[in-house]
Every structure is written in C-alpha cells, then in structure tokens.
Length: 115
Length: 113
Image: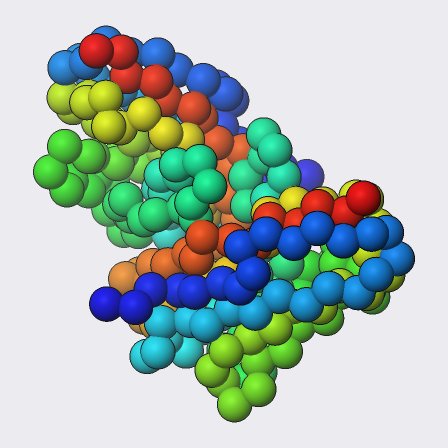
C-alpha cells in the first residue's frame, strides 16, 4: 500500500531563493490538496485540484506560490523569492471524491526553513 | 476568521479513563466533519468522520458526537491508552460548492500511564 509521498522531507533555503516540492498522491485518488502548517496551528488550506484542474486557491496564497498537477497525477508546489515567513511544514493530501465518505490521506510533509 | 475552533490546546487524562476533545464551528454550511491524529514529524492520520445527517458515529474506542444546533462536535476516546498521546485536529467541509477542509488549531492529548 503506497500512501501519499512527499519530497523532499526537509528543505533549508536562503531568503530570496525559489523552492519546489513534489507530492505523489495515492494512485487512484482524483483530488489533491496542499496545506501549510506552522507551530501550534492546524493545517491551513492552500489549494486543491480535482484531476488536473486547480479548483480553488486560498486568498491567503500570494502570487509567489504556484501549484500544478499535470496529467492529474503528481503535483508540484513552487514558492518563488522565499521569505522567512514561508517557513512551515507543507502538507499534501489526496482523496477519492465521494461525498460523505471522502477522507483525506496526508503525506509526511516537507519542512521548509528559510534563513 | 477561525471557522473551526478547538479551544483547549492541551488535555491530560489517566490511562483507562475517557478523553473528550471538543470542537466548535461557525459556518452553518459545514456538513461533514472529520477527526485526525498527528504524531510529531508525521502527517495527520484519519480517525473518524461524521456527516450532518447523523449525531453520532462510533468506531471501536472512538466516538464522535455532533450537535448541529450548537455547532459543536466532540471526540470521545474510551478507554484512553498511552499510544493515543498525540495532537488531535477536527476538520470541517461543506459538500456543496467547495470541498476544501478547514482544520482547527488542535488539542494535544497526553495519556498518563
């Protein structure tokens, strides 16, 4: 059983650099979500895809953030010109659309530290 | 605005006793609720869910109760075990129009042996 896989697990970067994270969802799942979590907070919604279509983006997501899901399989999240405030755990989750039975399955996350 | 609130940041319970974790929401469009457990350095794992057509759902030691009029849900764990020590998040979603899940800030449960 391959769960949601995220790469890398940890990323340290300098302010102003660009970073890209990858998420491989559970293969039959058609929805893919990105969340961000900081210490003492719950996961904060960033964006989600159904197949390859990006259906919603958080209004908190600045223009420096972009996500893609080509061909409806894996997804990438890019942060341009990173700032110290971007330091957080970035979580990816996937699900199979199914109304009240839908469950999100999360990966282990990518911990980003911006110096 | 925090649409899903967990007002107790931490809770300590003796092993074998009941743990009750609470969650309040403000958006009346939410009709599906989930509880997740999170260990350090891992992603959240699904525990149990409930739809708004029910007021209770049970799965083994875990029971979730939903009070729609009060916009309140609770997770009961009985009996509590040391392995239950983790951070618990409630999440809510509206099935019409948007499928994003809004999470609370979490409650850290410590089960004492």
